[in-house]
Every structure is written in structure tokens, then in C-alpha cells.
Amino acid sequence: LAVRNAYRAQGLIPQCYPKVADDHIAIELGFMAALAGRMLEGLQRGDAAFATGARQASRAFLDEHLARWINAYADDLEAAAPGTAYAAAARIASELVGRDATLLEEGA
Image (cartoon, rainbow, N blue to C red; front, side, top):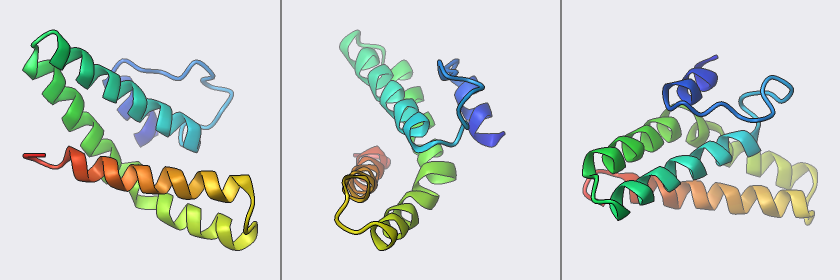
């Protein structure tokens, strides 16, 4: 429910709700993409407060949800299905989340 509440706080409910779990990797990554789009939108229109709000929501979501489990998920998937496209996609997602976290830090 904490993940769903994070979506609701931003007015972003997945289109597949309630048929797919709120914490599905694709849903969480889609949420992060939507927040990145909001940051860009805010910057393009010169609305620093809007962009900052989206950045803060992104950072909080990473810290409280996605970044907590994605590395272990990628490790487990690589161990269970080495060399598969799923394992590679999970590793790429894990790396991107790590880079996103770095970029979202204060002053970045």
C-alpha cells in the first residue's frame, strides 16, 4: 500500500490498476519515468518548484521503495536464469536506478 500511496500522492495511478501488483518492476519504473517527465516539463517551462517537487518525489520513491530491492532482484534473477534476456534487463534496470539515484541527490 505504501507504493500505491506514493503513486496517488503524485496523481499517477497505473492504467493496469488493480490487475497488476502495485510493486511490479515495470509499474515502479514507469512511475519513475513519469516523474522524470515532470521534472523535464517543469524545467522547460521555467517552473523550478514543479521540477523540484518531482525530483524530491523521485528521490523519496527510490529511497523508500525501488532502490531497496532492485539490486537483490537483479542478482537473484541472474543466479536463477543466467544469460537470459530477463536477467540482462534486470541488471540494466538496476544500473539505471543506481545512476538515477546519484543524479537525484541534492546539488546534482
